[in-house]
Amino acid sequence: MTNILKKSTDENMHSHKDVLDFLDEHLRYGYVKECKKRLLNQSLEVSNGYIRNVKSGVQTDWKVLEVLAEIASENKAAKDRVAELISNN
Image 1: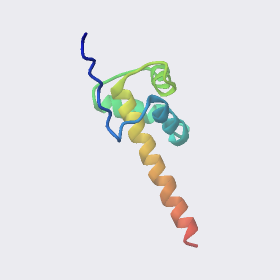
Image 2 (image 1 turned 90 degrees about the vertical axis):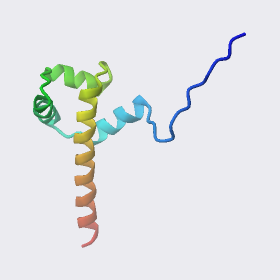
Image 3 (image 1 turned 180 degrees about the horizontal axis):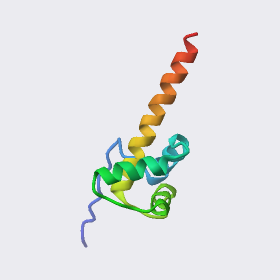
């Protein structure tokens, strides 16, 4: 009988569904253009449809997903700053 080793999961690891929900919540209109610009800085050229497919979970491309997550994180931080400024008044 073979021993089956289970991979240990990190506590900070997120499922694909959590990541896609985060992107849906925090990516604003025009994210494709910003993503293409950042990917061109990394010498990667992808189509608008490909970026949308990665965002929706149809395609898996870690480089594109990383850029989308960066954009979503920046948008979330901006939303939080605005909410904080509004709540201080």
